[in-house]
Length: 503
Ligand SMILES: [Zn+2]
Image (cartoon, rainbow, N blue to C red):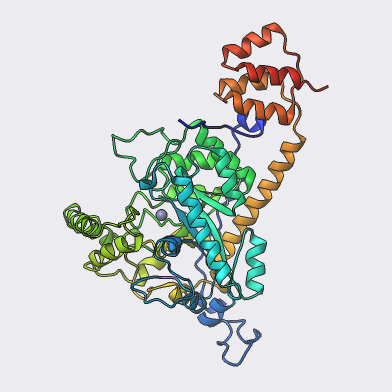
């Protein structure tokens, strides 16, 4: 069993931190007329520039950010080069399509398939490397980005910004050191779970499965992971988590959270989607919900057909047959794209929902949570069906056109297309800066604090780290030694305490 290290500022261990709150913004609907008044004064650059304040101009002038695409598996497993133009039947993202869609930044998903048990971190590292490799191959068009400022810098250089987000907290293998390593490698968000409950947080994907051990949300370690993410400046992503995990993360997180790819449960009744209460909670937390484009998450009729248990059996049989017929001689798993190919063919039997269904989700979240709390989290290259008219990232301008038709202003559309995510990203960065400064200034540990931490099941190894960092302000009398021992402090921890008395 791996050591599940606890962490950080002792003050955080004792206090339940409430997120910074801010009332939800007003619903977004505005009259279409008001968006047209400025067109005369706005200047269009270049010969073929679209008319100012046309949908095309609004889209072209936006910093467009998508927070979820599963393309790294194509990079790694299919040797896909992002510079290659691929048919939309094979992939949703390449540099040509990115340009057409005016996508400024993508958070590439570092999704670790739970089948990689025993090698989660290695798989995550390989996927991370695959994104860096793409950026290295196309330095004139693309660059890695690690901060909100980096995204702006890339945009100014007319380059596509590639960012990294881990999908599935199991990737850290219950080890805070790995979490920090991933942050060093540039990972800037992590979904606390994928569809699988891990060893510290419940997932919506198996919450009703009695064979899976659940925690009614998160374990103590899971809560410390959230705190450490705050301290590092890694966005806490609640997509895929169970409702209980979601609410606990919101209570603990000192920074706004994101849902990198989640839609509305009120409109499409899937447990992966978010209830109106959850949307309002994200608004209070000043976070952002990035709408997932998957047909089964945005259209109730499609969802019912797609998840029909009888039809599901047929798909599973086809998949099993394929896997049997195509064993990889090197022992590697059947390629993600191969599996997706089968699933796509199977999903094609259900008519694609209209684009309206997707826009309805954006609109609903803007109305319930406020227009400051919604964005785009396509799930491109990770889903087997998209709504009509959205065949790839090249079609993002159609979303802008639909929002304009519904009366959204240019300012609000820009927020949805990327501004909201930038605000949250900057807020998360500022929170990390503050927490790191506070930690530096924190006083030596008191005896009561050490007792409380041990009572909270902090390990001796972690206590040693903290004592080295902060020192203690008390002498280790025989009585105190016994008291600490009774809470399982080991000899090494006691020795460290004895040596680190500060004045
Ligand atoms: Zn996902």
